Length: 322
Image (cartoon, rainbow, N blue to C red; front, side):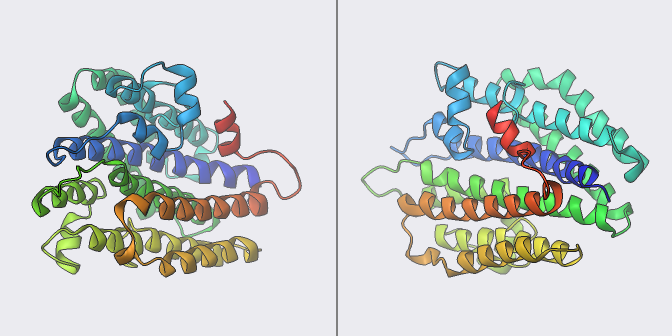
């Protein structure tokens, strides 16, 4: 397979995953804001920091209020990581190699693009219309990935799709979890039930609530939630599971030594973190380390398979420079 085709497949699925998880992040954050304990506070500009887009946002917007942050993350095509931009990028990548994918995949991605063109402006009309549109994005994206996973041969093309999906999913899962570290709790202790509702929002954003109750506990406690959504090897949206999936993809690809080493190093460091001893205020630093390891995996994959004989920056680096 040509490296150009492999890179387009990898980025197509990363853009789709990023769009879905940005929608999950926004809906999950909105739920956290509604469930804040008495006296707690949350600043919307922290959401921009969590996704790592501070510089781009402040170049375009003066105030970091809810409306501005939502417009930047959903609608603004000047932001290459906005939901509208991600779906447009995924559509363009898909268009260039339609012969590699099931025919229906192009139709569904194009339909999602057209849906957003018509309905994305509704996300500025309040939290309920925003939730409805973003939930539709999540469902449509899941339909696309279900089609790809259920109707493609498990060849090299499939492995690059799966690899990109899991790198992006692991990264965005850490950012969804990181939202709770931005909540400023009052000095007077909040009730256990109020704090539990914050973590229920995290579980709901990751569609993990039922599996957490089944495999961990009926009680939602912060450190147990962290252990589950980051370290559980069986639930498909955890970082640990995503790293295992990356490993299986790389084993199926040739010349995988350096990217595979990066994946195994990241997993080892993740499993060494003890969330039962981490304070909520220190959580951000631990998650930054996980995100740095995922960035190293991306760079190893990019260098090995997409730019081995050239110094061309990756699409991610190019997007960050826009």
